[in-house]
Length: 114
Length: 112
Image (cartoon, rainbow over the protein chains, first blue to last red):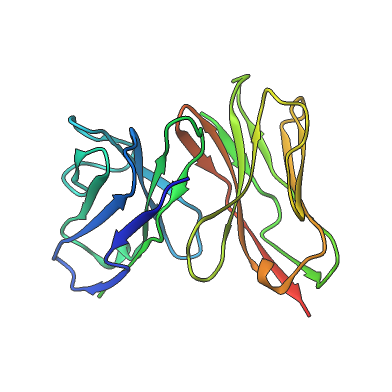
């Protein structure tokens, strides 16, 4: 498996501002993903974070709203830009360690936008 | 696109009894992976069990086992000897080459 940490664990933000969420893994991984989980809902994939290239976004998610960085094989950030109350969700990162064919998740970041 | 369906939004079970959560999926792929994740109120997604589609044998992990019916595209989770700590949301998931899709989830409550 993998040990994954996320910062911050939770935050309360004002509308119109931006928040950057960090995801750190204890080993090098090729595949890293960002998910959104709206209140009472399942997980929805935002994007695949690719090391050394642009992230690959799912339908309904755009880079201007959710810019992603992946500077190396153990770290990624997701920024939620120009936030509105509709962005209030849990944001989770996940990884697929080499040879496991299994996704492991970070502890999540609970975001509340006022 | 692959879809995953969990038809039971909520279920409850008495402590020490057995409960089965249902999951069906739709895919044209032949090789893929199926998972059950548990999400307690702490919001941490915890891997419960994993099944490789090319394996006929059903996966088991202690009190947790699956009934994998590939032709029927069914993947149910059986929890034996339910414990209070099993209370959580349970998500069924399908994965192919890292692309993972989740069901809507089943909220399981274990009653003392």
